Image (cartoon, rainbow, N blue to C red; front, side):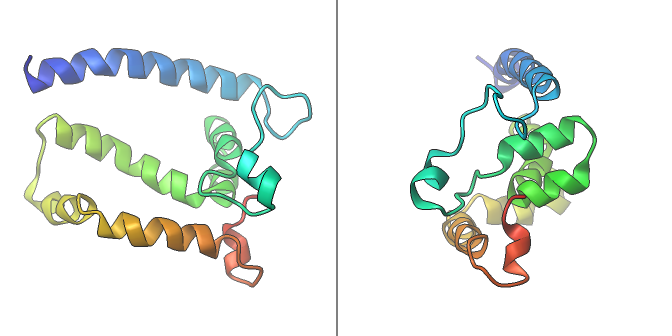
Length: 136
C-alpha cells in the first residue's frame, strides 16, 4: 500500500475520533464535579503533576476558543499539537528544506529524553516562574 493511500485511510478514523472527542469536550466540563473524565491517577497518588496533568482541561478550553486558559493548563500539549499538522504533512511527503533541520532534530531522542523530564520536574517546582507551568 502506498504511503499516501495509507495516510488517507488512517486519517478517516483519526478525524472521526477527533470529532467525537471535540464534541465530548465541548459538551462536558472537566472543571465541574460529576464530569465523565477520569482524574489523574499519578496526581492523586503522589500530589505531583505529570506531563499530562491539565490536558483535558486544556483541550476543553481550546474547543471553546480560550487559548490563554489552554496554555495555562498544559503548555506542552498545546505546543505538541501545533506540531501535529507539520508531522502529518511530513509523513505524507511534504518536506520543505526550511523544516528539514527541525524535523531532523525532533526525530532524535535527545530533545525528548531531556525536554520531557525537564518539563515534568519544572512544573512541580514551587517557585515562580515554574509555578506558571502547573495546571490551574
